[in-house]
Length: 92
Figure 1 (tube, rainbow, N blue to C red):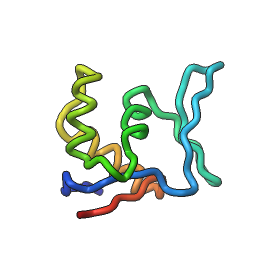
Figure 2: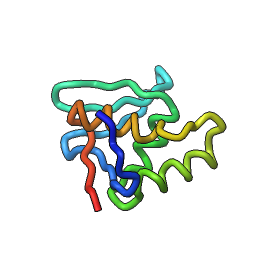
Figure 3: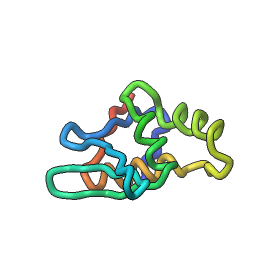
Figure 4: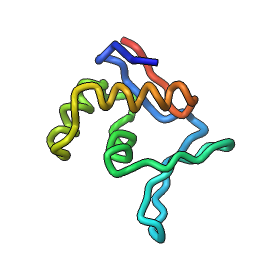
């Protein structure tokens, strides 16, 4: 799945929450059925997915934090979580 709309506003699905496991030094997304371990870039994306920022705004903000954010990274990450029902997107 690809999200072509850069004005889409992503947010975590209501049944998903992000946690940080200090013992392992890793972030994870928890849902009743699944656990997704994500890296620091993924955690930064999730923190910015508040249904207020667009995908384009999130990408711009991440480029200020990370050197290796490539165009389309945010879109692919969000699309992957939407496919797995871990994230929702408002269009428009």
